[in-house]
Image (tube, rainbow, N blue to C red; front, top):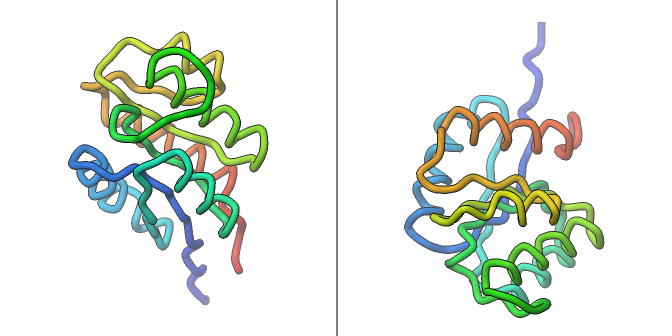
Length: 139
């Protein structure tokens, strides 16, 4: 019986110490199911450039670690606006976190949001659900 190949998942992540930890946690918990790759970005413009250049399965972002420009409002609301646009324009889903209560705003934007500190199991469940819905089957 042949073993199934792992599917490659590209998780575009913002660049910071929290995201580095999140990457390690995702690798440890989901690396058995996926070949994980984590290209990084630090600005909204870079996020959109990467999304245009390659297939991205998920964006994982700590909202405060990115330079956001799209729309009005706080930088966190601008981040949620950009992630909503990314989903509408490219079909790329996002999981975001921040140490502020932004759940309602994120929900309106269609972004899975976790206020830090958050339950790791719930976070991983959301990441897995996103990947299961976006990563193509065997290549």
